[in-house]
Amino acid sequence: MPTDKKVDYIELPASDFSKQQAFFETVFDWSFTGYGPEYHAFTDGKIDGGFYRSDAVSLASQGSALVIFYANDLAAVEAQVRKAGGEISTPVFKFPGGRRFHFTDPHGNEYAVWTDK
Image 1: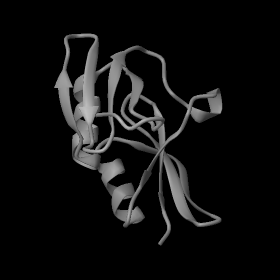
Image 2: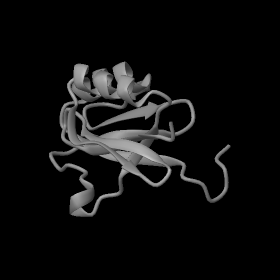
Image 3: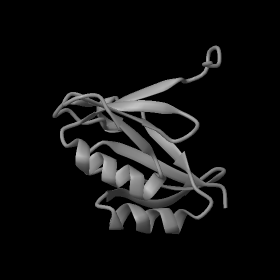
């Protein structure tokens, strides 16, 4: 049962579901369920979401919300992102409370990964 007043689902654009699925399975261990040619749902075990067919991209600089992952080992996740076909859009930088980097997935959507270590 969903938790009252908590983020429950995230939807993002994608034009090539197979590339998105391969990337997120490899880097973040997501599981996918296809719902035809226009939608693929995912889960990471805590939060669910989906990719809808679109050529649009989600970029914070264009006003989109930024999905931010946490990682114990920032360098290891950065290497996985690169190896799986993601591009680092903002190199690792320090901020109060930790360090983080931004990347784009194979479709061009922007995300960030941070650590407090």
